[in-house]
Length: 156
Image (cartoon, rainbow, N blue to C red):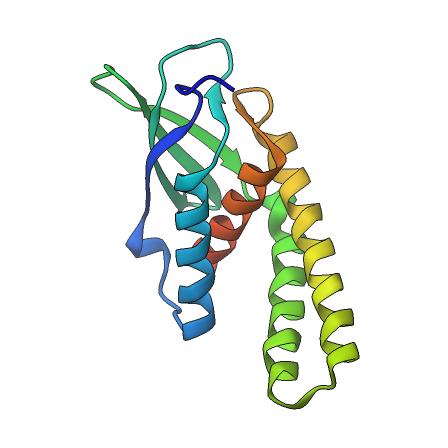
């Protein structure tokens, strides 16, 4: 990975997020911190990074506004949210189970729920990576962190 093939700064549209609890805030902060620390991100066919990314949901579409180094205007990439909806819903459900189980579950039950949670998260990450692939190149770890942020944006 070239040092320019990365996200240098990312913002989430605060209007897209209305539901916040401690767990969601924690997941968002970890994803943002990890993403900025280590990511692989490039616009297909262009070499203008590092990038500044603004991410939001608008009219059932995931919007990436991407500005490369030295560019004055952002490139807007819009993806349908539909293909991700059932995975996001499943991820929310299993996260709720996980957080509820943290209160009194035995370690083996927590481990089983967490394995399911990671599996659904991986599925959503692969799907997001695939949806982005024609216009944005990301590695799996970057797709995982972006999927977490997409989920945070869908909390209403």
